[in-house]
Image (cartoon, one colour):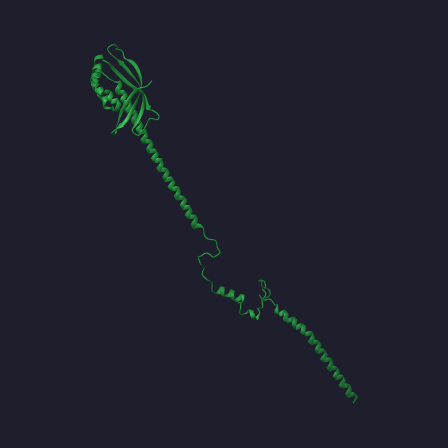
Length: 261
């Protein structure tokens, strides 16, 4: 009996010890299990060990956020699977293209420059034409005055009548009135005195400030060689005249002749 009691005591003590050891092992394995679950929760998703790509952390979404927001991988996969065609329209925040505006400005400046050049060319042509016409008119005034003075200073007894008619043909106004009605007496004096004059124009030019569109005063320096019955040897005589040339019905004539010192 004593032996049976001792065996029972030994069995109960060994059972207690085993229970105690099991409880201690369970207590030790509980933190280890938690540690494994934690390690399993923060395990990084990525390529296997040995690849170069850096591991990316796996974000565990909460149950409530699963319906509100799609997973990043799913969104990126959708975009990559169905790319949208590129559009030529600029993005809303992109700066506007200014090339067309610059081109318009360049064309505008070019057009302005061309118009200015054309206007300048037209003005220059008009000025040149006006200057040429003015020079031609001045030369016509001078030529008429030179011829008038030559007619006055060149007279011969045998051609006195023709010489006077030539003077009257180029006269008008006051100068014409001085000769009208006196042609015959003038021709008689020249023939009776056997007066011969041979004229020469030394210089002639338009007087400053006297020119208009229809008239001008021309200063003429002339020299004439005079001979007569009483003085057969020709002697020089110098004259300085102001001859007013006027446009009468499109014809230039001497309207006034006066001697000036």
